[in-house]
Image (cartoon, rainbow, N blue to C red; front, side, top):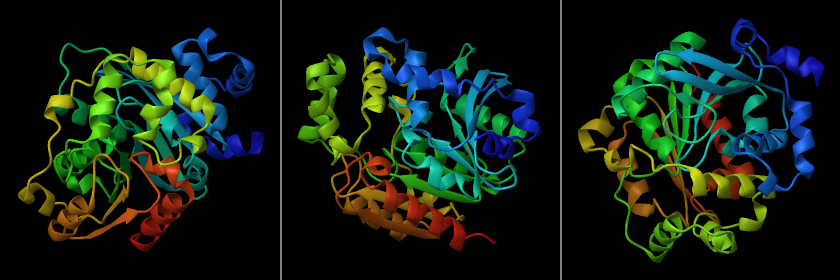
Length: 315
């Protein structure tokens, strides 16, 4: 592992990298989740990372950004944007595959859960967009590929619209409120009711509305996810989230990959059809046997499609 960690390091990680606490995180695996703090539960999930990584603490004008970096220092840059009620630990099924040949930056959204720390008077989409590009500047990411899941897909699309010349490719995994409006359903109603009063005994039923394979989700992540949904505040961007209009979507000239699950609460064939109709350069499809947690339900297939897409469109 020491050789791998040396491979991960560069001037950025040397400047902003936190001490390597991975051995301490391993000790958390045998602890009962109820006895652990929110941050300890986060750290415990990092034992699933299964590849060398460094945690960064990056000072910004809006607060402190927490970023998990993995992959070779000279690899093509990829930025991961997590979903609502989640943080960068949600990428545990994907990080090893993505990090083999790419430099991967998993960023905790400063307006959401995770280890990034907000220090600003105003919360808005415009401020969040400027915060991400500030991070890209510090990390010297001129034109990374963005991979966003759920709300992270909606945010990634906003970043691509704000500065299209700064985004190489856009990969959207079951993006929320991006191509079509969220349609009322029993699953949505169940999620809303559960969010009002989350209880451990109802967690599996709640997860079943988001995942087609709840048994495939690692228990350590489930423990962390449950703590997050019981303690995290509602996203300040929730009321801003609405599908993009045709003019906006047609201006996205970079290659776009859009994957949705066949049991996805937020997307369906209509979403895929609209993306294909409007986006200039798009590959869009439904992944079978998958829910909204597409990166977990069909991790191997999703990883393969992402890597193939990046490779095919690298010039």
